[in-house]
Amino acid sequence: MNDQPVLSEKQEGPTLGEIGLQHFAPYLMNRIMGRYNASLRDDLAKMGLTTPKMRTLAVLSVIDSLTIGQLAVYAVVDVSTLSRALDSLEAEGLVRRVPDPVDSRSTRVSITVSGRATFEKLWPTMRSSYERMFAGIGADERSAFVSTLQKILINIRKHDF
Image (cartoon, rainbow, N blue to C red; front, top):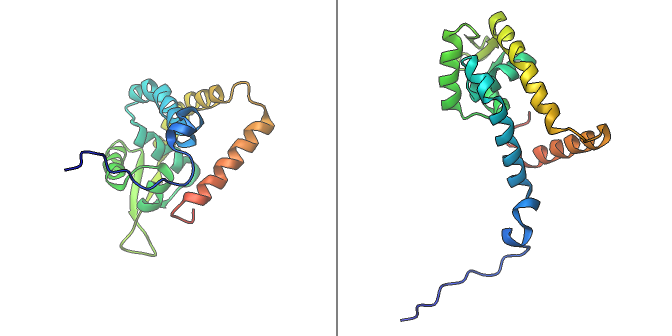
C-alpha cells in the first residue's frame, strides 16, 4: 500500500501562494467591500436597516421600478434574502411591490417617498465612506480604476445589465 499523496497535474499559471493575497484582486475587492460595509453598519442599525435593505434603497433611488430579479442582480443580494428585505421594507412603507403590467408573472419594486427620504439620510454616510476609500487618489487614477472595474464586470457578468 502506497501512503504517498496523490498529486494533481501541474496547473498552468501561478498558484495563489505564488501570486500572494496582496496581489490577488478578488481578495482585495472582498476586503475593501467588507470594510466599506462595516463602516456603514452602525448608521444602518440606527436607521433599522441592514446591508440588503440599504442596497435595495440605494439601487431603487437610482433605477426605480425594477423586477425582483433585476433588483437582486443590481443590489448583489440573493433572491431569498431580497424577498425578506422587501417584506420588511414594504411593511415600513419604504418600497412598494406591484404586478408588472407587461408580465403578470413578475413583480416590480419601487421606492416610496419615505424610502427615498430614508436613503437620503443615509447617503452622506455612504458618500463619506466612499470618499475615504479614494483619499489620496487623483481623479485620473480613480477614473481608470472605475473603468477597469466596469470591464471586469462585463467579463464576468451573467446578465446584460
